[in-house]
Length: 152
Ligand code: FES
Ligand code: FES
Image (cartoon, rainbow, N blue to C red):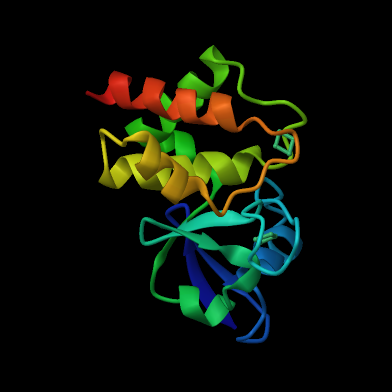
């Protein structure tokens, strides 16, 4: 058994230590807000937070999350930055098909938690690992600036 701190709750799961965190979230715990895209750390759909850092849960073994705080999209609105980012996403109507967007929001929140005034270059660097097949990149960047202004 492995014990994980997910969104402030302790969860016990019976999985091998090298199981990807994404499988644990989606299959063991039915937390399907975190998406499966490439499974190889290349698209960002599976982004979650580990001690506040954006990580690719598809390529993070669950053993690496033991003793750390895992936050997923299901709880991102519990903190102010998450609330502001989601509000900016809604205001600017960022979402198209939506598949990539939980990962996009997780990366945006991780950026704004550490940088309240990101430049375009900061945003592009932080979001480079999050692919959007609907090409919502311009609205994502605008929404991050919108959220940054709201946090100022
Ligand atoms: S599913 Fe994890 S990076 Fe694509
Ligand atoms: S909104 Fe469709 S993949 Fe990003």
